[in-house]
Structures are given as C-alpha cells and as structure tokens.
Length: 417
Figure (spheres, rainbow, N blue to C red):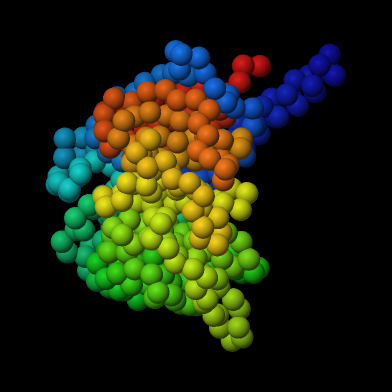
C-alpha cells in the first residue's frame, strides 16, 4: 500500500510538472522567441483536418492568449465600451471567470492588442488605452493599476493604440510607454512602484515590446523606436548601453530576434527590410557593428524565427508580397513563397522541428518542415473564417490556440498515445 501511495504521488508530481513545463505564459512563449520545446506533435492530418477541441466566441481583436497551469487568459474588447480579461479551462473552453472594466473609445482596427503575462500568482496586462493592471490569479482582484500613457504625459493616443506585452525581469515588470516624458518604464512587479524610466524615445510611438537578450554574459533590454533608433538598456537600471541608427522603420512592430554571439536581427514592414548587427563589449562601453542590411526580407507584425542557421519570416506586408521567406545568416535569401501562399501577417511558431503557421488572410493553418532547400508544407487546413488572423499563436501541451476576428479555437496537435 505504501509503495502504491508513493507511486501515485510521483505520477501526480510528474504530470503536474509536465503541464506547467508546457505553459505559454507570455508573448512569444516561455523564452520569448516563438519557439516551443514540445515534442510528439502530429506532422499531418487527414482530409478532415486536425481535431478542434473547442471554439470560444470573441469580438474583433489581435491579442493572443497566454496559458498557465491549464488556464487560458485572453483580453477581449466589447463594443468599444469595455475590456474583458477572460480565463478559460484549456481542456474544454469553459469560461471560469472574467475581469471587466469600462473604457469607452475607438482606435483604428479596434480590438485587443496585448497578450497577458503570467508570473506566479499574478497576471500583468495592458490594454490599447494604456491601462496597466496587475491582478491576483487566484482572487481575480486588482493588486495595482497604472496608465503607461497618461501617467507620462501622453495625450492623443497612437493611431493603433497601445500594444505592449509586459516583460518580467527579476523583480521588475517592464513596458514601453513611449509617451512624452518616458520611453521604457520598469515597475516593481509586486507594488507597481516605478523603479526606473528612460528618456523619451525618438519618433512617434511604435508598437514594439522591449526584448531581453544576452550580450556575452550580460542581460540587455532592447527597444526599437520609430524612425530612428535601436537601443540597448541595462534592465536593472534603465541606463542606455548602446544605440544603432543605421536602420529605420516608420511603424515598427516586431521586436528583435536573438541570434547568438552578440548578434541581433532587426526587421519591419513599410519597406524597412532588415538588418543584422553585432554588439561587442569594448571597455568601458559597447560597440555596434552592422553586419548587413537587406530589403529582401522584412516582416510586418511577427519577429523572424531562427532555426538551424536560417531565419524564417512572414514577409508579405502592406508594400511587399514575398510570403514566407527563408534567409541565411549572411543575408542570402534561399526561397520565397510569394503568393503561394502569402501568409499575410499571420502568426507562426516553431515546435518539434516544424513551423506552425497561419495564413493571416485566408485562415489556413500550415505545418511546414523548415529547410533552406525549398518551401515544404506537410499539411494544411482551413480553420478560421475571417480575414486579419494576425494574432500570435500559442501552444501548450499539444494544444494550439488560434484566433481571428470572431472566435478562438483550440486545436489538438499532440499525437495519440
């Protein structure tokens, strides 16, 4: 009996840890690079397509879900009057609780923008109007509240609102205000007290979330601002460490892709193309070297994904029609899908040596073998009904979450055991 009891406890422990290990608790997943370590995913399905576990109705929007301990958290905006943070059970799609507050107003392409960030028992989420809440995951109550726009002198909102996914760093939670009196802001994550803020960023507000990267053994916080500058900050203090002014995008959205060895890949739409830079420690500061620039690769919404020495990105934008593009780390393009298919602004992630990719216009989901030789689709199915399927994808324990302008669907991608 004792052995049976201990074995049971061990199984419960392993199962719980397996579940938590496959959490997708923030924008672009556990490591912030749109890459999952999950294995055992299906690589194809029959003519009926993948199994849809559940469908949940949403209003228009572009914010994707986060997953923590079997719960799905997604922001929803209702009738231009209120914001709703929804918590669903990932196994069946049942809504368990909501946090709702009134915010009247419109922005261009209305709807949600942000993905909640889950850190322990706390939820951090910022809406299109700059309202920034820290909630208790268990009581569903507000712990603290700020407005990252008006608190720092912001007046007229950016055309497409505020699009920030909170970034956790040790005891801090970091967002880019981009208002008149602050660029990037770090709050004490327990209390909401401001720990540091940077000087205002050049240009109009963009839609980039700050990204933590490793330069040597040091942590840097990288922020891309409109029409001018890529800057690296000390995430502990907000001190500017370096800047790069050789690449410009008038409306930046994707954050950087970390390549390794101090290399960062920067990309954007609106004919901005891309650049590869290298950050080197040169006492007492840092040196930025531009390795190459190209107009042959430029993603509009989602950052590029690195896989086995090649970059993959959805490079159909408002001005280019390159589709999914594969490029090596020297800037040589290997292939482009162009309009077959065009993958216009759709979300995509890497898992189990596959690209899982949404066509942002047609609502088709693709499984793709990433290889520099050719575009190699493994399977495809039409799963969404509306255009503008632009939200980031989320994968947790074999369950893929996708959304469009009216619904969220949970797709079973795990192989049958």
